[in-house]
Image 1: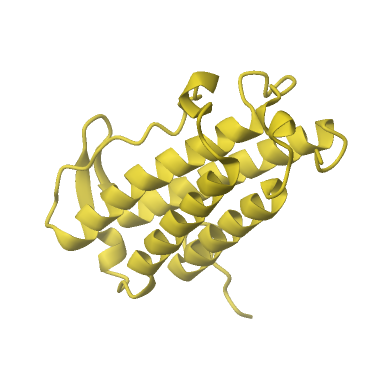
Image 2 (image 1 turned 90 degrees about the vertical axis):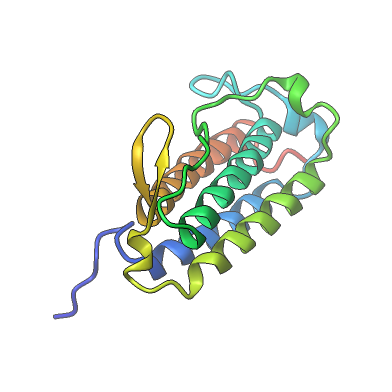
Length: 168
């Protein structure tokens, strides 16, 4: 019988999941009306909007990319904090274009995926010093990002369903 590693343990699975999550988010929100994207969610998502999710994912992806690049290219570097729980205020993304945010997120995700593509198994255990969490490895960082993606995909799907489907 073939052994199938648990989700988040196999690097190739995590890279694939990262790429798919980006595509799913892009597909879910692309072409929606701005009013639908800005509409506040219903409980349990009342502090979020779809535009806020897109803005948040884009911001997190940038910091995660910096963490990964440092861990991969330097020996035990200090890595910046990425606040995975930060809920953006509407004023933070008022001037943003949703399609540009989606494209920027997709571009950052592609770049981060390519950083990981050729890593050896030993490289996945390379790490850096996080200001609040201590030593973090590439593997832990990517696993956490994968779980973060899933949470926001489920959240975005709930919000789109509450809009009656696609929010066109």
